Length: 433
Image (cartoon, rainbow, N blue to C red):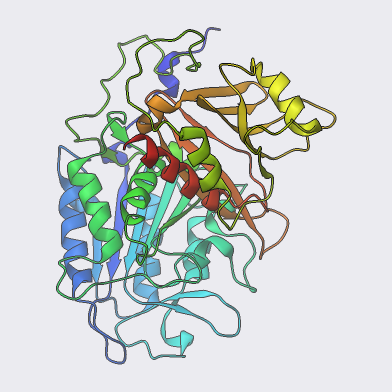
């Protein structure tokens, strides 16, 4: 049977079969108030209900403003998980607390006391409800806008597997406003908290040069790219085993969004390749582009597997093998650097390669070549997840989103794809002048 090419197109979550639970605590008896959280709930409700964005019926949106106890949250989530057959979105905004003994994440309630996790909602209880067999939703997205929210991706000492890593129940992802070691921000005088403000802008304004529907992966990458402009702001993290590309709770309202492919035509076009003959460049690149790439990659810290070829140096054994594998002629195109996740001793090199002309991604059958002139069309991000064998080791994957397709590196516990994503975005900035 010939596969239907439309099956691989991003699909908006069915509003009639989806649910959202939005939880927020803005006023506290024993903690600092967060007035922007109340605005978060109102704006997200309006965005999800907007027919242009998602069109979720308001009766399918449960808003818990100032929940009295953890049971109120869990009851609402359990009911929504039973009712939804397509997508369930669970959102929390407020203070996040880290248990000093177990490192677990707790979600603060209006009467939560400092250093008293028993007065808050334990995230592990929420995770269990969303990974149970009674959940009817095909997709579940958890969005946490609180301090230490990245701990939801790591799992605490007392937890088994976290939501994003639940292999037996596919279709889950967790979007955290900050890492496991950083606080989320609510700036004085701002209408919304920092992370949710960017989430709302992404929903209402859309993302340029992306498809007509927005996946959790696309929204995460866009929000992260905007927040990273200010080095003082915490950056969000995403935990997922591929589900983030399939969970699409919003239409893309950007006027510069990509047109929908014609009916019956595959959305993904052939992988772009580096042109072999000269032509007019779309952008004027810096004359020292290869040297600038070397300088950027040689800054510390460097991820494992990265090596830089000094200008004019004779290739070593590994660099020579990469050069031959990529088919570089040594005159028009030379190897500048490589970020590899295998040693390439017994098989073909696999990794991300920088040449004097292009960025190349090669992982077996998956191949990609982006001329530096076109680098502005691509978005670079990363996903961090708890490694499958241990509870305290992170696993990383680099994500590359282009006009026609998304690529990702394999999961690895030591590659530090966040460092490489930052390098790639800095190199992209060089091409923009």
